[in-house]
Image (cartoon, rainbow, N blue to C red; front, side, top):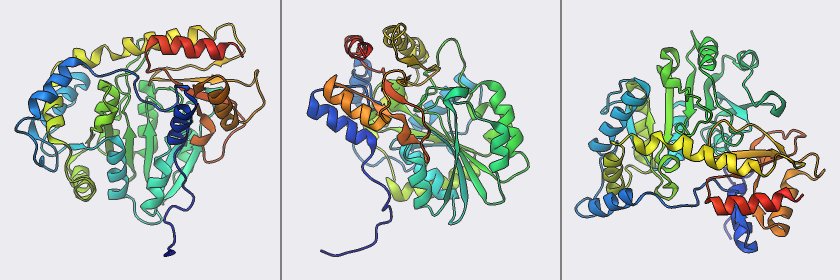
Length: 381
């Protein structure tokens, strides 16, 4: 065997892979990994079938013009923001690639990148691979996982190159309010700090809230990479289709990285999405669709020992089990998968330094029958 040093010696198989495999092995209901338990629309499938004939060669590196134009038109209609489809919109193979390219194109060795825990597990490793130094700020469950903007300002240093943000938030389901944009802008104004904004759940916000995209604030927009996903919006996580919206000077650097990662994304998928995106109803009804599922799932826990934490967006629900068990969340997640046959994600894995909270995350992007069965099993504890 040839021995060589690992570039990611501290990185193990992701918790999503572990819990999904355990769910499969145990025949458990899988509410762990964040993928829908139902298919995409027949209309989108028919579009893919149509464009699979005659559109099977390399797409342009930045994405087929039809899809970039549809993304720009949708951004104008939904946010009132005009983007240049040629110079500010890039199609990529999933939002994780968008995050990877955005971080690597701007982070140099020794640069600090601030992120908020609990944070999606790809953020820290990608920053380290770029030679950057992750700076973690811990959000508190007792404060609704809200960002303390004063604390953020204290963490900013001359070495801060970028700040990673995520709303609606995975794993907690918290969302920003519009005043958060103003507070954020005050922190970065007058600096060269860039923003990498993970907004893959932009169309899944509840209780009449509006998604507070960084695109809506001029001070933030001029320094931001906005990473989006078709997978979360159209129930097609397996297509691995996403995009990055950024000013021209950032997009130029972003594409230099993108061309060495995937170069281009699947051509027929892009044409199908270009057509499907033209109908706003396909995404405008998503919040109501998932709110019904959230409400169904949590209704089973209202008179139990589980504590329901607010889920204001995304398709995740966090439950506090401190009145049920003193087990650490990783152990309980494994035990419930084996004994109750319900798989979840322990929230501690999303922290650099795990707090004492006892919280599990459940994905409610599943069929109602599965949600009801899973909730009934858990509610017995």
